[in-house]
Image (cartoon, rainbow, N blue to C red):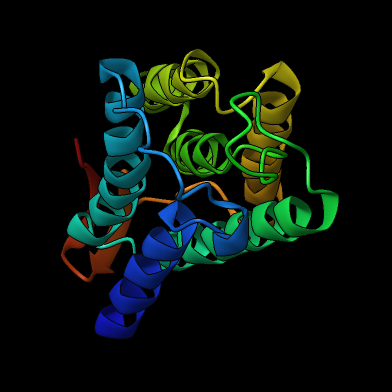
Length: 190
């Protein structure tokens, strides 16, 4: 199960960074080199979702990892369905896959998953990274503000459908009795 899940996630990651419409790519000129901000945004695109789902596996939260995967697939599917059906020109005129921002939708899905599953305090760094990624897409002239807002709504919205709060047993109250007496026990896991 875990192997299939990891393979599915890796396939989705590669599809999300692969250009959706190869015919719209301008191959007649040399592409400009990506700036540092754009490169960091590209790295966050891969590392934030991987860190999110890996953390769930590490702590033994297989249910959460499955919820992440379902949300990730919905986010990716909706993003690319809109990209292919709307055909909005990118600000740098490189192709017509501008709306919505895939980088933003995927990173905000990851941050939103951490928020809904494990709590807001754990998601603060993830939201900062997702926000940086959204800003990097505007800075690199690949998207405008509308594109990144739509991407963030799609990413966060998928968590509303699939992600539930993590229920971990922190406290346990036990009671045992016999003819000699009774015993009350209380344990708390940190």
